[in-house]
Image 1 (cartoon, helix red, strand yellow):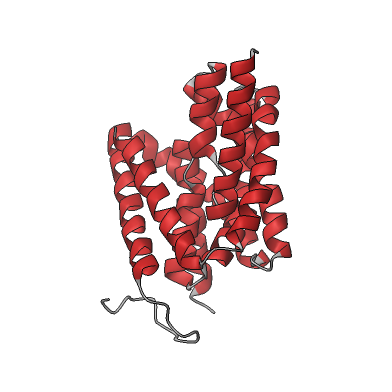
Image 2 (image 1 turned 135 degrees about the horizontal axis):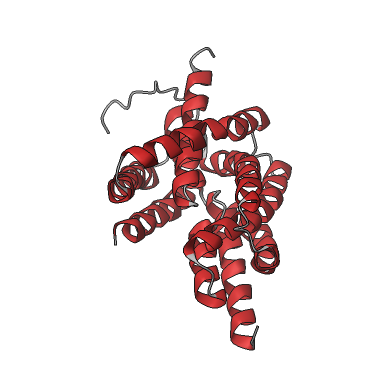
Length: 118
Length: 139
């Protein structure tokens, strides 16, 4: 148990650093580390990651809002259909094998890495 | 806003949410390019605005996943609450090294994670209860 907190702090630091630097990246760091370091199942890792992201994104949105960079209307316009998407996505996730979740995540990571490099 | 923009926002928003639900990310990887392409926001404004949409996705996604029994509240809250440490560290690092070096190193980390997860995905299912220590003992 004693070794858990330093690892959680490391995940938080890496997730926060990457989301602060690239806007995306919180989840792409948090999910793999929860799986690889803590032995989470894929579904647990994705669910717990979303909870962490609520806090991370809310704090970052407030900070960016203070600089006047947030277009609230646009965020709501693209966020509302996303709510329908996430309800469908989480429902679908319960019906596919966890290995498929890992495979989809691996593809997402490769695409995201390619976008960063190119 | 014309019909193409509305349709585009609806489609990319839905896809980003679907991705978030499937793999536990906020969806910024799709929100940011969507806001740039369909609404013509600058990269910085798109990045900042996507955070609002990410809060929507993550809140509803975490709520659904909690009902499915897939959220460890304590770990998730600790990671979320401590993340501002990372924002500070990230800002310091960003001012110390070139942006290109950051992009390349993050890409390398992502490829490493992809490789690790792909190995899990390809491995035959194991019986539950096998407790493996953190150091992987070669696969």
